Every structure is written in C-alpha cells, then in structure tokens.
Amino acid sequence: MYFVNQGSYIEFVSFNVVSGALTSDIYGSHVACTLCFSFQSEYPKYTPLLAKILEAVPSRNNDKDKISHEKEVIDAANEVVDSVDRDELAKNFTLRSDPDDEEAEKIKKKMETTRDQLAEALYQKGLALAEIESLQVGIVNFFRSTFMVI
Image 1: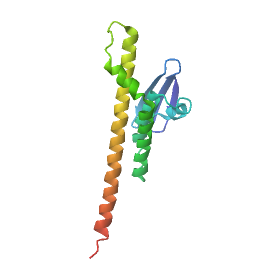
Image 2 (image 1 turned 30 degrees about the vertical axis):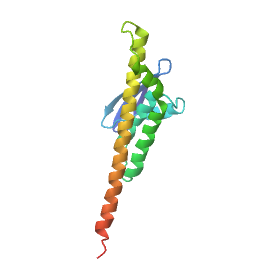
Image 3 (image 1 turned 90 degrees about the vertical axis):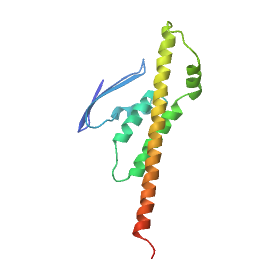
Image 4 (image 1 turned 60 degrees about the vertical axis):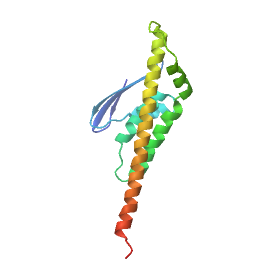
C-alpha cells in the first residue's frame, strides 16, 4: 500500500504483483494514479495498469495546450488497445462457459473487465480525436473571421 499526497488530493494505491490486482482509492477533487506511471516500466503490457493510467490522463488537463493534451489521451488509449489480445477476447466471448466451473467464471469475469477497458479506451480516444478536430476547426474559423479579405 502506498500513500501519495498530491496537494489537492490524497491517493492510496496498492498493487499486488502475485494476483495482478491494482486498486486505487482516491480522495479529493482530482483523479490520478501517480504510482501507475512508475509501475508501467515494469509491466508495460498489463492492461489494468494501462487502463488506470488512461483514467488519470484526462484529469491532468493542460489549459495552455489542449491539442497536445488530447494527443496524450490518444497515446494512452492506444497503449490500452495494443495491450489487449483482441483475438483471445473475441474467442472467449464466442464460447459458453459452465456456470459451475469456478475457473471458467474467473476467466469470463477477467475477459469482461478487459472488454470494458478496451471499450473505455476506444471511447476516450474517440472523444480526444473529436476534441482535436473541434479545436482545429475553431482555430481556422477564428482566423477566417479575424483576417477576412475585403
């Protein structure tokens, strides 16, 4: 268990290497996972960790350069998408599991979590791409209206 004081929020993070469980209890107005970034170098393809990092990126909004911030969101989302074995995920959802088989239920639950993380990553990426497009169109419209040729 780690305790992180980040000024306007307090976060308790625990990472169980044996089970792979990553939990984060965050108190305050900001949502972030500071220690997740340090774990990323040790576990670069661990989807739950990358999903936590993606969850933290939008909250670190940089008002000065919104486009580069949205590109950070896209990069984090791409890391989550790349970490998911989509063939295995699809194969797992095509098979019916025995509800009495505990191991099969654990795998099913893990796959459902992975599916949800993949969907969230794609959603965040779509939002970021739309925001970049909106910002770029806004800049073009600003210049057209400001420097209109008479």
